[in-house]
Length: 387
Image 1 (cartoon, rainbow, N blue to C red):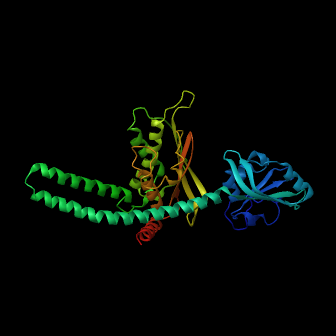
Image 2 (cartoon, rainbow, N blue to C red; image 1 turned 90 degrees about the horizontal axis):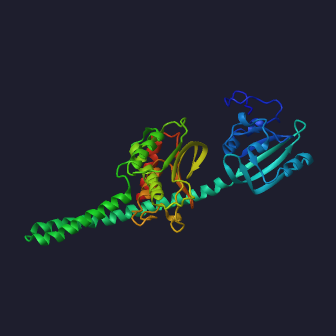
């Protein structure tokens, strides 16, 4: 990848490439340049992210070594006739990644001979996901305001009920009557604890440099200790991921809720002999140029928790992160709501993708933010939720 004079990109200049190629380096659009033989000559950073391949590795390789379009014939025809074309909502197969939906344009470039094709890719899947994520974050804030208001309205009369029951109990002389006042006190305490759990952690996060893999391994030890025969676990960690600003204890709680849900789904499923054995996969990777809410982050970590259990029921899939929503008869429906709240306090995002036989929770956390940034965001969210 060529670099402008004085730049520090580290990519060697290619004298055979068209002039002005340096301007493509920092575009948000994925730019891919192929020569007359449909071999890769250049990728900008956005294309490297989109196709999960580096310029150093792919330069000189055939185009179909990283992506398959619906047909390579239009590319050859565009090159021969020097005619550009655009494909809307085209499906391309990215090797090692899978199918993605993109708008892409192909522009022939005659300089230098025998010519190049400039391919511009606008991924659509991410845009659709951002819209869904914005809606999810908005719903999360609305739910938080509702819970805080409900908690205030419930806890105040509960305190009065409990105090009155204690005073009444002190006046009673017959032991069998005190059993009734004790029932009132116990139920008031139970409701107060339920409201506290709805609110999540009652202490603001203590942000400090945190190793996300240490969090995950601690959660695995806690979760697997509860099962006599836990399922197989596969780890696919990226050891180069730096520490992030986070509250260790709260992150443990967040991932504990997700991993316990996955393990319980695996344990409760009746597996047929033809099905593969129960398995849990934990995966970590870094993503560049990722948007969470209204903030564009240069670098985030993505943690995937995958299981091959029965999947999430379609009737609760859209309400999975709402309080009191659970797919199990004995579930409280609070775990994922609390997890979403904790991840939100860390400026992050949680998403789920589930089909029968496969469920994946993906948690995104910014890597390049200070403790002050996290604390300021949490204060902003708390103030907004309490107004």
